[in-house]
Image 1 (cartoon, rainbow, N blue to C red):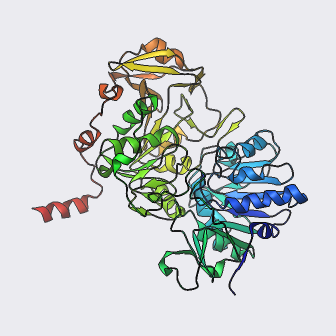
Image 2: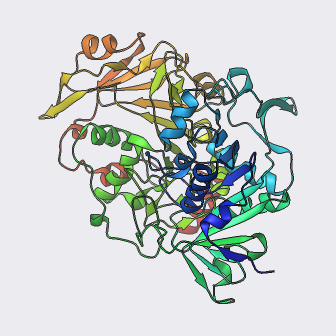
Image 3: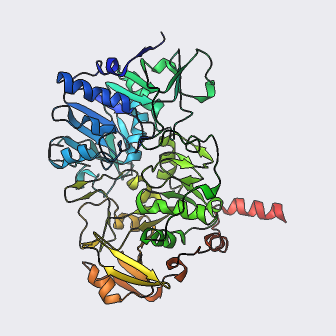
Length: 539
């Protein structure tokens, strides 16, 4: 039977008190069924129902204001939120910080992959991801509020090795989104910036006897959608809500490059202005080498994409993001997760399969706190709840980790004249602390796994040394070691006997010649067997 086309208000009537909602989409409105979420909130404000909802969504959903999951931030409406991050939904984050709801933030990749386990009727996801972080039950189990008392993650042993077991959820309603639906309910996503895990969500709800509601922009005649473009088969869809005003993201009505319809000249991609963010991105980009497969996390690290485009180095490496984009230029600013000029887009769970399996050569992520044991915190600072997003999946499994951030925060005023650093005002908040508030990255586990790690700022570069301690290896021109480094840390790091100045090209406004720098580096050999074959074929 073909699914019914209904209004968003009619669809919201099917959501019952106590339901668990599985919601698709990513970040700043990428494939987010926002009209459906808003309709549920509208009904609650008018009728006082439904109440005590649980929402499960792998990625944060919101515009950093009131959209996305922010629509549901009303006392009595939301009981529990389980997600990768809350930073996109300040109203919900405030409820979690005030202990008004049960709040859990779990690794984005684990929640994404868990949707497939739920679709198959399996009890949960067993993975190494999250061990020795705040997601580990021994360190909190991903809880972000005192009301969150249920154990959603268990420690288990398989073959004598420790793993984490993320439990499956019963799904009552799945809210998914596409671009077009035909009269049989087949859903395509030709205008969407990301695919997410829409089919797995629909399958999980169907397996549990739940309801699948799809939000789309337009309807098509039966049999006219290209079958190979169908991302959610109509057999899985119960109701369709058409919103002709549906925008591609919360900030962009439609960008054909986000949709993969066109590739834009690199000159059309805005260059970063010369600033502290560009300086940090430049130093991080010096770790790139030809053919490296990389992830760019949100925050300051996304500047590497703009920098590579500006310096015509984008084709020398493969930049990816966890939402499933491969190649091209991942988006910066308020739309991380999207991208332009990409080579391919895969469903998010498959991207995390690749990440978890060690497929990344280099990963560039931000940091908020780093401690003496080389642990990193990005997930919580005081009452500010962020969550890990894809950080844990990425950081635990990349061959080399590059953490980037400013040396201090909260009012830092720093400039460069003739390549020399001038600190007008130091940041009020120290980011190199005695002990991080929450362990989002375990330095000890990384050392055990043989991973290389660097910590890059605008004035200093550190590495994790063989003793498992933070070691200073570079400082910026014009920096006073005692005043500008040691005095701004809550611990004294080791200092390399080969301490040197950072590359002077980083600190000047003109182009730094990144493409030539990358080309001059020797490319690591991935496979000795393949290398022998190729060498023989060339000769």
